[in-house]
Image (cartoon, rainbow, N blue to C red):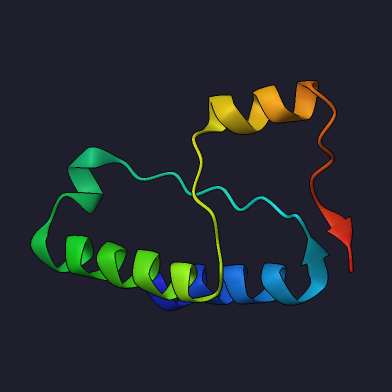
Length: 73
């Protein structure tokens, strides 16, 4: 699961300019020990790819203010 998420981000950083990748994490599932470790690994690897993390409301606000996300590279 974590490897799939990382591959999604790798693809986006290669082929999409200013892309947005959305993950949905349900607390009753992600809150287990091994999954929390996987989430930590995902965050570290995504940061290593230069990914910026933002809440959905901030992304939506920036879009309404004129930022265009997801241009093909």
